[in-house]
Length: 100
Image (cartoon, rainbow, N blue to C red; front, side, top):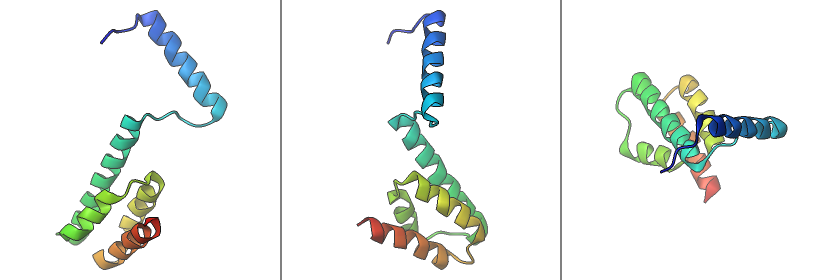
C-alpha cells in the first residue's frame, strides 16, 4: 500500500470534510458501517447481560442478524427500559419478521 504525502492527505481530508458538510451527512464506508453495527450489537448484548443475566442463544442469533443501523440504535435505547428479556425478544422479533 502506498501512503500519501502529508500535504496530499490533508488536502484529501479537507475535500472529504467539505463534501460531507455540503451534504449534511457523514460519508461512512462499508467497513466503518459494519464496525458500528458490530459495536452496537456488542453493547446491546452487554447491557442485556448486566440487566438480565444469561441470554438465550436464539436471542443472540437474532440480534446478530440485524443489519439496520437505525433499528440497532432503537433497540439499544430500548435495552435500558424493557422489563424482561421476553419483552426485548418481542421487539427484536417484530423487526425480523417485518424485514422478511
